[in-house]
Length: 230
Image (cartoon, rainbow, N blue to C red; front, side, top):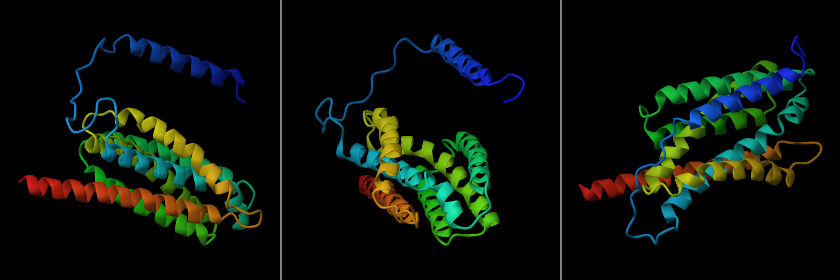
């Protein structure tokens, strides 16, 4: 527990809450009026916006469908006790690194190609997990998985904004992500058996593939529309 005991966690949460409240004091009282798409009724989300949200939903559902079973997956791979805990710790550290890299890369990397590469990388990581690798590979892939998870996540926001410039769909981005995080474990629980948890990997790969197809469709449709406009 450390010198501060269990109360240290609550103290950190309190400090974060106070910092958030202070940050609210400098938020503008009003924002610029968002553009309105004349082809869409007021208050309704565009079809492209909903499709982009579906990509974010499938992405998060696929990740959590797999990651919720990391401990039994490690056990099924025959790893020593504590390997799953170490994998989670490495993944969390890699997630922080991935988020930091994404912060610095924002606006510098193309949205769709970055998501495509990240989704392919995460799918490859799931395939490696399916072969029940040894401890070293398992830990390495867990770190890569965590890095790509947090690195790719922020890029769904510009994807949704690009699909729906009115930004109405972007307002639902967090909700779509959280819904995916809830749906992934639920869907996986319908397929995973007691002896073999690798069914979660099949589901996860399928969901990531769904997200990948949507991202590619949005990317190529946008590229075609731009070429026609020119």
